[in-house]
Amino acid sequence: MKKWNLPRIDSKFAVIALTVLALLYFIVLPLAVLIWDSVMVEGTFDLSNYAAVYSQKVNLKALRNTVEISLLVMLLSVLITFPLAWLIGRTDLPGRKKFRTILVASYMIPPYVGAIAWTQLLNPDVGYLNQLLKTLFSLSQAPFNIYTRGGMIWVLTLFYSPFAFITISRAMEKMDPTLEEASRIAGASPLKALWDVTLPLMAPSILAGGLLVFIGAGSCFGIPAIVGMPGNIEVLTTRIVSFVYMGDDQGIRDATTLAVSLMFLANGLLFFMSWLMGRKDYTTISGKSTRPVLVELGRWKGLATFFVGLYAFLSVILPLGSIVMTSFMVSMSKGIRLDNFGIDAWIPVLENSQYLDCIWRSLGYAFISACVGTLLALFVAYLSVKTRVPGRSLPDILVMVGGSTPSVVIALALIIFFSGNYGLNLYSSMWILIVSYLVKYMTMSVRTIAASLSQVSSSLEEAGLNAGADWLRVCRDIIMPLIAPSIVAGWFLIFMPSFYELTMSNLLYGSDTQTIGVLLYELQTYADTQNASVLSVIILVIVMVGNLILNKVSKGNIAI
Image (cartoon, rainbow, N blue to C red; front, side, top):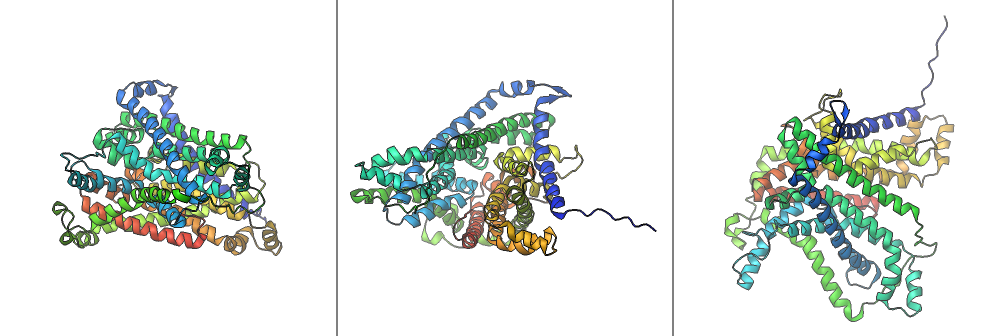
């Protein structure tokens, strides 16, 4: 009897092919359907809905607010962070490392937690800071109102400026210091060298950091919802969520139109930045040592230290202090007194099964997302770095598109695509939340793993294959152990933002899938300040512990 031998399937090809198909199905198709639905009416190409949506003054104003506020936040962030990066990275400023740690710490704070903190501080009626200033200066009314356009710009700047600070400071660390030293030898003062040499060379990084801030601020929902909406300040993200909450077909259609507009705005800026950075040659790194000669601040040292310390206090210490202090107050009505502090507010939270379920549920969803996302990121990074297959960069681009797309757009695309109209129905299940986290946060894991994979010699993989092992075993026994720290770091880069995510979870959760971010937002919305503060502290503790582990694993090269 003749035996039929089935062809042997190449495990590497099979795994990578499945990964690419998954990315196409969960990223490309939902976004494509979202765009399609925004321009097709009853099978006919029709842009009338765009005209109808933007003919409404509230939507046009939301678009204008989004662009104007994001631009102002971007400009303020760059104006603040470039001098900070220079002072910390290029001068003899006392406590430079501590200041860097504090300033980067604001990147770890979920923006909506920061918004809650500043509503506690600058609420026009009961804000701690306003009450203090009224008492000190005998004022009849509060000097600040957080629920204004200026208040919203302030909070957005504080919690998105770290994007610019990290980008600029890292580029400044790698810049060849001999260029500045040559300028000083030629007789230029430190400030003139900064203006004529450092600033032009840093222009690409400043632009990149600024655009990241613009995209982040324009895509943010938590801060505009908590700070802006009470003051009737609408942006595109809050309008999209409002339309989705309407629950009818017209609301979804209007939300789709605004979401596509926001998606093209964010992704268009990102690809413009990539194009601009790629078309010019900015060589600032040489093969020589890049240890710079620090600029001596001299008599300006005290003033510089004061201003850097003041910004660190305002951006991190003050809002964190407000959240922690509120969580330990016995009664909000008694004010700040020593006999009004205790753990009374913590006990009901820790005994509340709904709150505990949300915490464990968020940890569970984040764990699953991190495990699946890290595995996919490993295969995407391998395809991009270790193969010469035509189109090998396509999955990397798809992951980047998902990461750069605003969270509210991803959520709406998944609602439309996975509501059962296109086969799979995931609506209101835990799986749609996990898919959304993967789409949004996998990009940083891919970048981290790819950077490590590029340093692993291909000869090690070839030796394993020549010894008779299949590709999956080579991957498990050789490649993964060699890049284990980057895999762990990539895992945490998905786990931590998935744990405290708000925007997508707020649109996608069901009655049995509420997460801690959604719970915290609802508590703040219904003015349950103390419980919201307790949960905020719990989130911050978990995030900081995660960041400490990540710093330990990556030896300080990667942070959340």
